[in-house]
Length: 293
Image 1 (cartoon, rainbow, N blue to C red):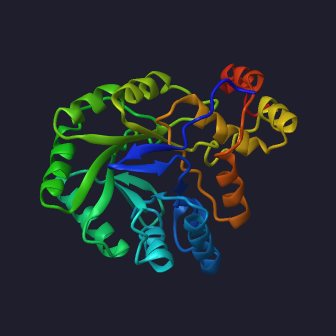
Image 2 (cartoon, rainbow, N blue to C red):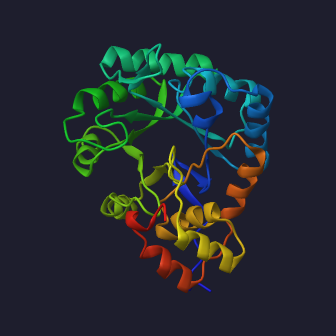
């Protein structure tokens, strides 16, 4: 087996959270827009997540819009004391479900108030500033105005902690010169590793790295390497991909999303999956060219 076992928790917003979290994006309708096909099933998934020990839920008021936050409130309010809810601001949806930037200071303030109202809380645990450049890939540019606006909301007591999403190393450094940053949420998984250096940089600073699309997102990872490793150790390819993230670095907090209780349980079980050294070596050697094959 492997020479080490991943640590079960990491610090997020001043709390030790279990490293396998839950992303609520898939609870909304198709294209993360409109209501779910089965509202009862969505409520059941959220309640099962908490029952299974998940204490870190990722959401946003632009999922739906408003849908996932209202579902979270219906399913879980009043919230467990140990539950950390992380939300995102910086974007909006139009009537055609497009993702549009909404990052002027007054827009960010309105989005914080929307999240407070829809989640029914007095203060938000963590708010990630989502930078909409390319939709799922960071682009350089100053984020000083936006971070300063969030820092003001923090001083007012509406936001407890601040994170970033879809950002570069330079943007992290700029933000950290203004306010403490507790997490960074970027695209990252076993085959999409453009942020390898940033993962390690943040780990050295004790900052959580939260990979979105840990299983590939709208185009799920299909890989013969994942399938082979999964068959060898008696797991599913999805579980292997999630477990690899936990082995990759102690500051990685995956937030796989699902609208299925069965898939949720599968994801939770991945947190205790042991990857042998041989499997880790094969997975470490994977690249985008080996996916979808």
